[in-house]
Length: 195
Length: 195
View: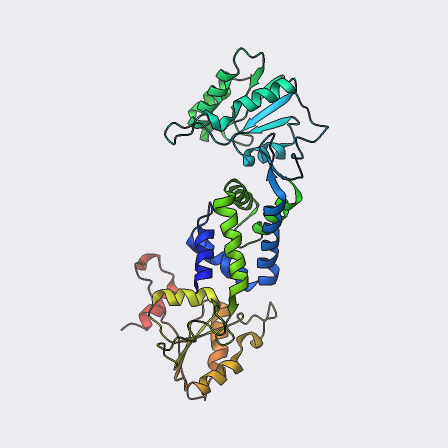
């Protein structure tokens, strides 16, 4: 099938959630519909490469000349910062439309096994931002995994005695979830946080 | 998240086997690993756009100046042509390494419902090739679906009285398949073709 196609299939198959089979399928689709699929996709990826940058303030990715649309939005609250693990999580919180503050996107979670240390959290930068913007509350919205909770604990410790309200989203029964199928830890957390 | 990212996510989510969720995941991966993922992928897609063409003889896609590596391979037999529905099927047959003849890739299967007529089969072109290369056998390797079988039947009819051996791959029990789980049609076919 030629080296160019093989290389492309290999590259696509390394993307998350894809394998050699789906990569082959995608490439064949793109070859079959060059005008409708390959060309616009290439164009779009080039636009993203050229225009999309990481915000130097919060770490969001966006099309912008300088800082991202969330950081530059005058209508959003400046006194609440939500810490998220990744841009994906930032987008997830944004989709709920229930948070109108600022973000701080980590470069990763702490993991001594993988050699990921506190420098990924950029807490000095965050602390500086808190001081400059009179931030009153920091929301730690990290995954309820071991790494997420360890990182959250570290951040709480860092901000201890700094006169800041540190909160986290509640644990509990997912909307639409059945009690019967819920794991014991979640159910216990939901019961002790009942109201 | 900005119009460029949204456009890219939308375009990726229209690819076969992907949806909005996986498209978002891919884009976030590409933004996170720009140097390792986005840049090489773009480069590779541009190479494919520039170098990969459809073979005017068989319909295969390949990196080549004029005709594809299969058509120009002197070691392959010229007297057998295998008809496949798509380049994906051509690649599948090539992976078996058991066929060393030529190919004829259809532009689609007959379907009166979808308005796909015999012009997609390019049978005149195929007939001309058969004459020029003293082809003795045409293998119809189409899917065992209604459309595939209808198209196969049409092609058999077309080549009737043309002094060509028309064959198809055998139907039967898949290697590693259990009799118990096999559908009745396949089992019946396997029994009547026993040997």
